[in-house]
Amino acid sequence: MTPHSTGSAGRRSLATLVCGALAAGGLVAAGVATLEPGAASASSHREAPLISGQPQYDNTDVYAFVSPDKPDTTTIIANWIPFEDPAGGPNFFTFADDAQYDIHIDNNGDARSELLLRYTFTTHTKNKDTFLYNTGAVTSLDDPDLNVTQTYDIDLVKSHGGKVRSRTRLADDVPVAPSNVGKASMPDYDTLRKQAVHKLSSGAQTFAGQADDPFFLDLRVFDLLYGGNLSEVGRDTLKGYNVNSIALQLPTDMITESAEQPVVGIWSTTQRRNAQGYYQQVSRLGMPLVNEVVNPLKDKDRFNASSPRDDAQFLKNVTNPELPKLIEQIYKIKAPAEPRDDLVDVFLKGVEGLNQPPHVVPSEQLRLNTSIKPTHSPKRLGVLDGDNAGFPNGRRLTDDVIDAALQVVEGELLGAKNDLGDAVDKNDKKFGSSFPYLANPTAGSRGAVAKGVSGGNDVRNQLGDALRPAGASGTGNMGLITASAGAGAAGIALIGGGLLWWRRIRRGAY
Image (cartoon, rainbow, N blue to C red):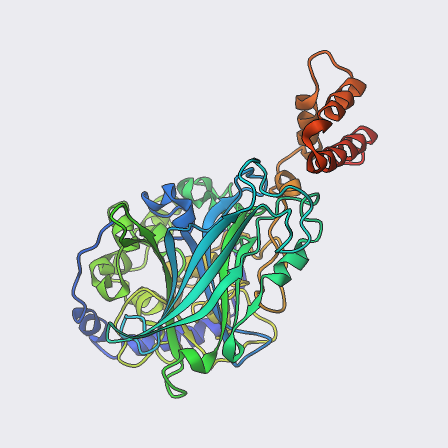
């Protein structure tokens, strides 16, 4: 955890807002008392035991922000399938056909979704007699060489007080951007990305497909908090990995209760169809890091299966958090006094005067005040540094939620000034300036090097050695490749690409 500058003015502004909320006296306790714990059945990156074995259904992160280039719209991004290795074929990364990927919007603070946007996917395979994801170079989403494709439908469900009022189909059979297999397979991936952006009615836009994982952090925090001596900081552990993303840009007046009440709460869930044919919730995510480092193991699976209206059962995990105690034990930084009512405001209610809706029912959601316009120069620490358009007022792709959360957990809002962080301050790839804003996924042909694996050339040379028969010279190896050309026209094209690649290796071009 390394020092960073935060800006005292920003600290004071948020601390003042929080202290004002706490001074209301008994507000937190009274609000939570209205929640009744409910029964539950069985996110970020591998955050709970059950979902860690079901990556297609595992929601990794949720982002929500006022669109910087279209400030009358709000963009919501939800990601699934953690740690997608770019070269992870031949069965590349698809959304599950037996799942409902849901984005929930609570626009009156009652801990229930008034709007639910449901994405359901269908997989299509042109030729099941090949092992290939693509049988040649893919230049468009309808290219016959793209062997495995997906499409999706979007349904809008409107509810009030937990009762469904209407269901509307917003889109049918929208194409998904494929996994980025590599340069030979997808020579112009950016074109495929652009073709996957689909315009809906009323100025809305949608996108689904693979993207670079936008979350930047050093995940070695789990090695007893960065090695026990701060020796393990400064490396973006997610560099070079991809995720499957759903992005949706909606007119803001479509999702808010009114102009007078501009705050919305947002979270995502995944429901998987069970053996009886019913859908069961298996993943849930709103604010970052809650189920990773706030909830203990006994609560993680239950949280993933629960609804925000039942979050009173997890209140003690927020008011008496484990993380500050671990930091005190290892680094001797004194943990703030409990109960942590400051964390209840940030993570369960929204900050009064910033992004807390009136009559709020405390629950874990990503809360966004849509009336706060985007800033021209976003600050990575968001509200902590005086930038009220950023985290915890929603979450932008550039927000450094690890550093912000560490500083808040260690008492920044209670007067314990600190500059804690993991020394990873930005994503390794630049984000886009227009929807869907996400960086393109790392290509499979560059996956190993992109993740910082040492000896990238050695990796390719080892692959060349693996193709060479025992005792064969370089010429013999090329002869072996050429001899396999009876696979048909598609095989000849792929083998030709392999020959070119092999010659470049021998010339030292890689």
